[in-house]
Image (cartoon, rainbow, N blue to C red; front, side, top):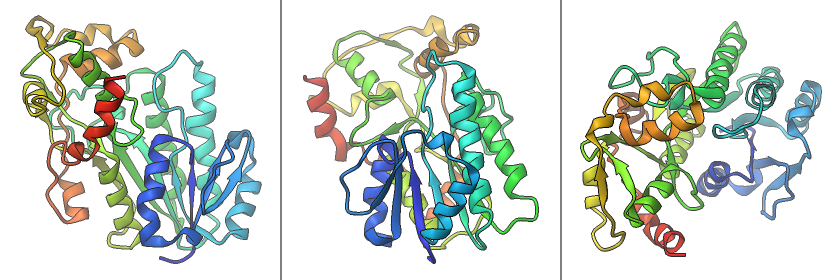
Amino acid sequence: MKGKILITGASGFLARNIYNKITPCVGLENIILISRQNLKCESECISLNDPCSVSEKDYEFICRENSITTIIHCGAIPKETILSWGVYERVNILWPLKLARAIKKVKGSNFIFISSLGVYGTAPRFLPAEETHPYMPDGKYHKSKAICEQRLLGELLDGTDVSLYILRLNALYGEGDCGVLMKMLWLYSKYILPTRASLYTSFCSVDLVSELIISILLEKVSGPFICNVSEPPIKVKELFGQFGNDIVGRLLNVPIMKGKSRYFRFVPWLYNKLALLFEDRIYAIERLSDIIGREVKPLEKFWLYMKYYKEIINK
């Protein structure tokens, strides 16, 4: 790997984990972080109160002065909220486009864009969802990611020397997680998890994302490409059945909801939650397995983080 790596959104859950896991491979001195907070870390950190307001020329200067050849863009509004579309557009579309145009001036550079499998819809319409699944986003968050992907493809694949990598991530889990899996486990532990026991759901460890990024950084794979980053699906009944005495709870089987949650699409924030409980989420990950050179298993790293989840749930 030539040059240094710039990681945006460095105070966030995903970026922190990526930083910790790629550091042994690339070295502390080769990583520069961008964050709205003053982070205490051994790598250089550029603190920006509003990274989205920084001009394209200023980002060009940052890349040139720091010999940056790779940007890993993790910064985003990461979920559906009550924020206006204008905020999503500014943060999730216009900001990464500025960074992409800045790195475009660096010959032989890489742009790794963290996207979401939600660009297919919170629950995909066609199973298994391959990378060719049409864009069918639900809500402002997924829509912003879908639009940004298209803008980046137009910006960086038209006669440029930039390798673009779009990584569509599934619901993440790992140290510091407070997202989907955590909420499902908490509800289950309170005996109030209404779902279909036969439902297929899937998640993605931060370790798997980092493993893929390391493969890119070590030039084991060349871009451009779009890749689903997910672990294989598992039945909800099997998922909780594996936990035994670690997390004790009970499923409230609701088969009547099968296929009905699509009617909630007009309320995206509600649908985003319902789809995880009543719609099958199955993604094709053959491309991912080919890139990292191994078979991926369902929840393959969950036991590594069981202590963390138990402590949070028992509080």
